Image (cartoon, rainbow, N blue to C red):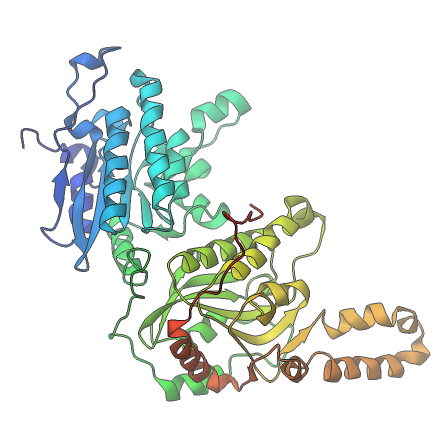
Length: 498
């Protein structure tokens, strides 16, 4: 090439250069650059005198784990990685070709934002990019790596993609930067506190993965691609390297639930014991910790995992957990990844704060996502399944193929204490009726809450011992492997409560 990469300038900031990032992401010697000769055509504000190599973004194709991918990386050392008309068109063209070639798109973002000198042409570049992001959605996976600043309109391209990876002390993602916040809101805030990696992995939920370094980030991207289909219609990813120690795990799973039904436990223990050894790959692990999402292997085949987590807020469903679950369910359904759901949920969270945030609207997303999905769906109720949350968490009523419940699980409108508090409110005030109330509570627990009642109604496929969970899950997914989607009513598309 007639130009040289300004690698040292990035190294001074403790960052890799765009070409180093690409070469460390893809398989060795597999990257093929395209459109390296593209230049801007702006003739105002001194731009006519500037020769901006590859217009500030390196684009091309390569392989990861032996399979083809499309990759682009913005080069902050070239005009601050700013996006102009041709810069945007290069990325848009790459995505369009990836759709046709049926391969994932990975974007490495490190840019100062829109190239101001190009005015509306720069906005056109973003528009072309956003449009292709939307076209690609559900057709090929899109992964965004935030490896520097990403501000203003630029954030909406990663925002449309499927997965966002952020890197500590490097990623900065925000609509308006600290200077604008200060001028408009008179607030002093650092870029890290406004839109750093931890902000978006823990509080906003925008980033599904937070990494401590660029090498770790790229390794996680490579790992993710081992779990997901590389295009719509691709076979579910299989991996022979995962094993399953049935004896060890069946003994352990029997001991996970605490004797005190009000005590929390980490649902990840159950997930690990049901799926292939060391195969669980969690997404959004720091956001909405009252639920768990991710991917795992069952007999070497990828499945999407959704679970309530009693270790976080008792596993209750709030606005953030609802969004997290619904998004993951819709992604898995888009690429025909079977869904395995673990339920231990006391209900939707009560109170004015969540009501004002729109828990009705957010909670409805979970019901909508599961009801709309047509992939094989297996649900395991481990302990509590109360009220509307029982229905929402992939119950038989909204499309689960098989629902299994552990013998001590509780399925009802609400827990015994709450139910008795409503049904026998007057009796509770009379000390002389304490024994009567206790009898009614026991009756409620025995006649209303047990899974055998739901099993008699056909709402539960089978009541199973915890140690048998793996077998039922594996056998069910094997049986459902060739499941066909049912006919849907004639319509363009539904209207999910966003």
